[in-house]
Structure formats: C-alpha cells, structure tokens
Image (cartoon, rainbow, N blue to C red; front, top):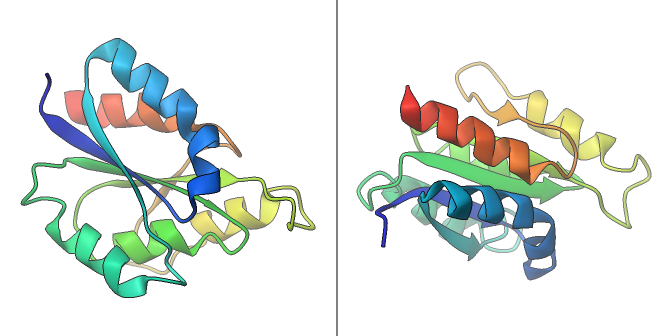
Length: 135
C-alpha cells in the first residue's frame, strides 16, 4: 500500500461522488490518499485541526471540493503551508451553476493561495496534485 500523501476533503458526504475522478486517477497512478468530510461552516475547528496536522501526518498536497460559498479550500489554506487545490462543485442550491463556487475559490486574499480547477473537475485536481508531487 502506498504512503498517503494527498488529502481529499469535502464539506458534505453528498460531495463524495463528484470527487470520484480524483480517486480514480490517484488509484491508477498508485498514489495514496485519504478522504474526509469536514464542513468549514458546521465544523470549523475540525477543518482547522485537519489542515494544521496534515503535514505531520505525511500529506503533501490537499484537494478540497466545495460548492456554493466554497469556503472549505480557503479555510484549509489558512491553516497550512501545503499546496491546496480547490474543486468548485455544482449545487442544486446554486443560482450560478457552480460559478459562485469557482469565483469564491479563486478570489482568495493575498498570502492565502488556493489553486482552482474547473467546476466538478476533480480529475484535474488529482492531475495537478500529481504534478506538484513530481516537482
């Protein structure tokens, strides 16, 4: 079993299915990952703890899927120096079909970088994580 070096985090269990592209690519490439559900709004302390301890747990890249206000990637990036990749997710509650999440992920304040991929494109997040790991 490969070492776990990628953390994949979403705010709701219902987001798991849309992250499948990341799971599939990392599995194909033999890269170990962990998956967890922690909400930036409902469990902010748990999100902060996850991010603060990621490096000591051996993680090297974090992928965060988020919809609507898409706060999760930024909340994670605020508590770690690891690369964070945001995956904007469509939501049935969104009036902008995922554009709101994309804009929220890309509009981070100076000093809190978050990379972003296309809406519902977790596979590209995993592809970017693989490139980061190989650098």
